[in-house]
Image (cartoon, rainbow, N blue to C red; front, side, top):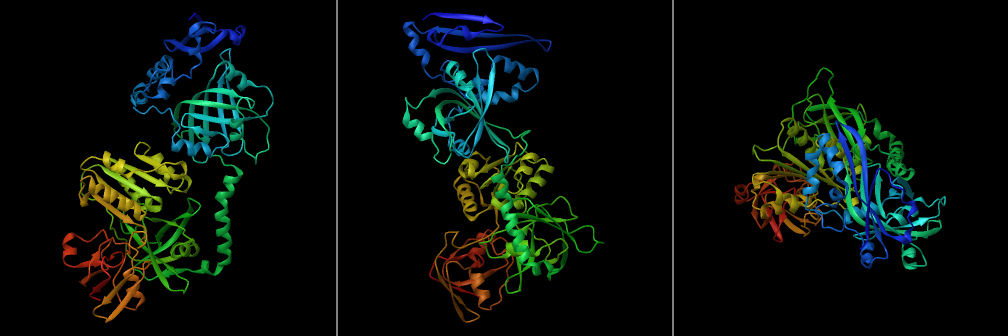
Length: 595
């Protein structure tokens, strides 16, 4: 193999014809510093004679530098000696060494990256010209025009443009490219490094057809196929959110619909007072934080009262509303703030397909509306255990967890938060929590293919860790089951539900319930709780939370087998024959209870 090495401050590669070169590779770009003054840059290029017998190896797709195995492709490609020198100069070298020590090569398109790529309608691509100048091009097209062919290959149709062919020419000479894909609304960017090649229709018509979009009228001149060498997600710093017309329409549409509904229900907004509890409050502010979640700020109704009852993280408030029959009903909502006694904040997710409480609160609570609530209660307080705290939240279950983050952060306690939802823009407080504790908060967006792995979180936890989980029943059950299997005690796993359904809890059998004192037999269908059946029959029964967290609805079981679904009764309580009829049911066909 004939090799010529050229070292120069600048090299004009245009004098070399493609038929004379097997490849041109910039192997080293060393920037020399002395007393923080740039002295010079050295470019070292290797020109391989195509006519040499060994030249067939020069066309192999590289892996990192020179095809060598790598621990982390991103660090291997980008952390050149000059970059490492700059990191050392400015004090970030130690922090960046984690990339180099990682066992994850990050040189493939995985599920999360594929989902992100498929949602993009543009990206930026940098290529290198033969004279060493970089060229950055904006590439646009229909959503998903950049396609994932396999875990190491991307491709996109090269539509007709201004016919300067800068990127195409650069790729033909020097195949290395880098891409940046942006999600401006969610402040996310994905960086990809790879080697590109130009593919014409005559050479691969099937590929051109696969990259076509019949709904997008633009002429395809050729395809660009990229072999992926490294992938890296980038931090959200300095990304200013921007929105397309379609994105704005999606965000505004629920508000427009809600505005119509509010106008149609104008009489509801005239409600000035609700409830009959001992704590009079007034709605002093309303903040729409997502398309379907509102924060209601509640202060003392009496202006002379400057401080509300002090609450600890995890406390909740029982708030009133009017149902469709104009009867007063109540719903429990976590108090999102615990660091300021002058007001409470509750976050209400509007659920049109729910039981009606959230929709009614969105309609009836206006600035100035007075509500009379019961005093706050806390069935989900931070325990006295001293181990590291692991917070897990799903969807609107973040509401009590937010106050935990505030409390633990103020106390400088060791904690971490894992928060999952459908998309970042629909996850309440996501950006706020990430800004407050960036190293301790991990967000999972299912729309991007990201999945919160309970098994992984629990497996990595210290043996003295304490878990707090709030969210859907399936998430709560998974955390309890996984923690039990890993050897954690019941005292180390705490949970609170924001709603309960017998069917969602895997309990969908109809049962017969005999009320011993009342002399009634009730047939309870799968979608009804025993408590609801009892109250519907006109029998008085104490209750509060209705999700198995407070224990107020506990009754004595006189016959039958109980399937306990609460998180409040102790093993001793269960041996005494007690059950919480708001969530627990029967594993037998019938129950006899002392009501």
